[in-house]
Length: 332
Image (cartoon, rainbow, N blue to C red; front, side, top):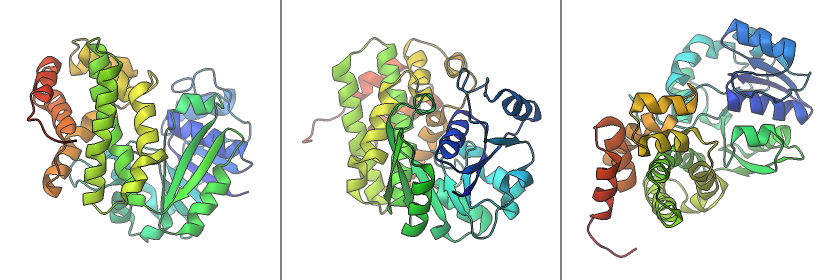
């Protein structure tokens, strides 16, 4: 049993608080809004993000970061990728010096093109070996409902990866360890962009052949970028690569797929936000960040470029499909 602080009470943060508590740990869940913290503490339910899911009584919900972080041995950073640096600036000094820090945000920082572990190191000065990544085919509601799933804990320090692995293991969530932090982060960030493309295709009424093509070619370009940045190509055939990609591209529970679906139906960006109930569709922002990162690494990512054009350059979904199908022929 270890003391766990989960910093952020969105759907995934709340779900992981439940998982850690179900695994027998002491868990503190920090909610930014006082009203939400009080509601969760009193009702043992998060009505804003996980309505209908009963949370363990052992979870202590607080609205003060210092209270959540006091004595924490594992600190889970469960805030959106583009606000991670801002949040760490406010409370990184409260994180115990020996704690293992776990990133669950999937994205690339817009201004710096840094991965989330790089943002954490940059904002805190922490040793990179202290920082782990939790990623995989992990749709929050399904795990909150205790449907069987697996996840990956990636960390340079294998002992820290095993610490988190033991702390998060339950009869419904099976964690694996991995030391390829870069590969796991690239897979997690890029799959959101491909999920937008799959959603757009489904919104236009296109079928399974199209979706299979997008997922397969999406995996190819994700792997190219990852390898160019130093990742192990094998990572992308595992849970953090293909597994996460399939789940996010296929499920209506995926915010990115749902957002893309509305765009495919003809909705504007603002109208599409309604499909995600005010939650962040990370792929919209990440499409620009990953497009720029790929350009810097001189890696060809045509699907990412197409999604970026729709989300940031005013291209229509119909024109996106035409552009992709009209690309020059080549060997697979």
